[in-house]
Length: 296
Image (tube, rainbow, N blue to C red; front, side):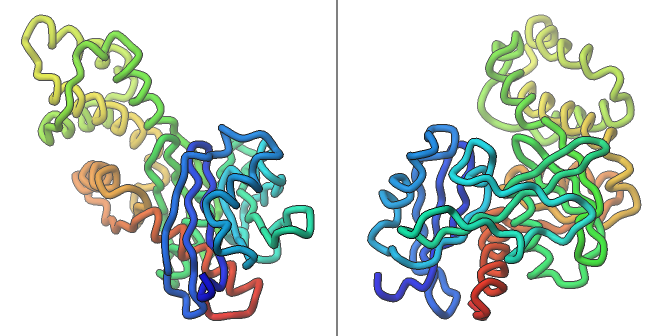
């Protein structure tokens, strides 16, 4: 492990991910564990980090995500919009001399009230790799973020709990009886178009999935895809001020990016996509270069 110059860490609620970085900026090795913030007490963070990358320590560690929350290892207070994505000057040093660990803060918005922690580093990575981008960055996920970017700054943002709603409805509501694995592109777009044009009908449209399964034999994969489409369509209707007339960049998992891009393409919205892990690492790398003055 003598070639490791520093360690990039994305520490979320359910997972801990780390990249061992060489002096040239190349990834030597990627590692992960299930030791997310939600599973740890305050005293458990250092042992969890050592368990994952102890053979590469001591080298500088730069982390983002829920590790900097009030319940995390050390609180990294939110930066208020409008702001550039938080970088080196806002990083918080974890107390103690044993390890050199710094945590990047999240971003907050007062009106309407909103917060992000972890996504700001992906945004920083996108800005670093796409200089001059002005428009909207969408980060699909459990809690999808829509972020207005101008002149390298986060101007405003909104969060939609679409992913969490899908998970709950498909696994814990009456609709779970109508769901099956698989996908149906046509059913997905039917759902998108239905609630994008009539979002007020979402609640009734959801129960229709169950009724169609009982009465008309709606296939489970079509029901699952239409459920996703109904929820994403309602989200797009609510977020219209963000994407209408804008260029949009997606940062997320490939499949989820594709669903949002397909929905927006029907509205004539130009989209580009980037992988969440790539942007997280790019954001952490940019912050590391700021702190240590190295083109890592």
